[in-house]
Length: 274
Image (tube, rainbow, N blue to C red; front, side, top):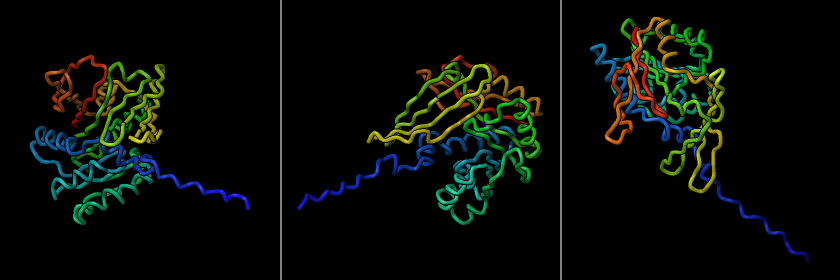
């Protein structure tokens, strides 16, 4: 009798196969508690009252809005994104973790932000450079004008921006997190159009990877361009620049500035009032 072929033992799934890319993203990129602290305190300081109603554009998992409705029982949020998969993930993994009362004050809508409709809100958020998906000046100004229309009379539009001379380079930046390494891959940059293709990869302790976990195709806008477009749309924008500690590293404190440092890489908030 011939030898029986042994069946190969099933291999254990890799860490990458077991990982959830959305959870990795939130751990590596976001700190919604600090973000909500900043927008909440700034709104109260500038307007003399507490904000209640928030609209989150390009919301993805709506992580920020979930934090917002947990802060006060008067807070509400409406969230827009065109990706049904990520909205479904949010319903299952984020909204489901809220209390019934909290979840009643947050609404997720699949819609292009240019067509989004909602009752006037105190705050509109466009974070993680998501609005850079609008590569043409005309389209960006149209978006800003639509945001302005959806704000209450003393409403504020909060956005972020990044820059520095490394922003225009093709490079990879690795950051270690608990259990994985976050890789920011500025894969391609076109200096004529300003268009960029960026990826986020995750590498795990067992050597496995989630390659191209997220893909971003946008224009790398400069702060002067953004401020000019916001002004043309009717806003009064102010740049909040991150302050530095004794070692020259960012300390998480953002103050209004009219001049910045020529750093290799920086992140700033843009606070635009009607």
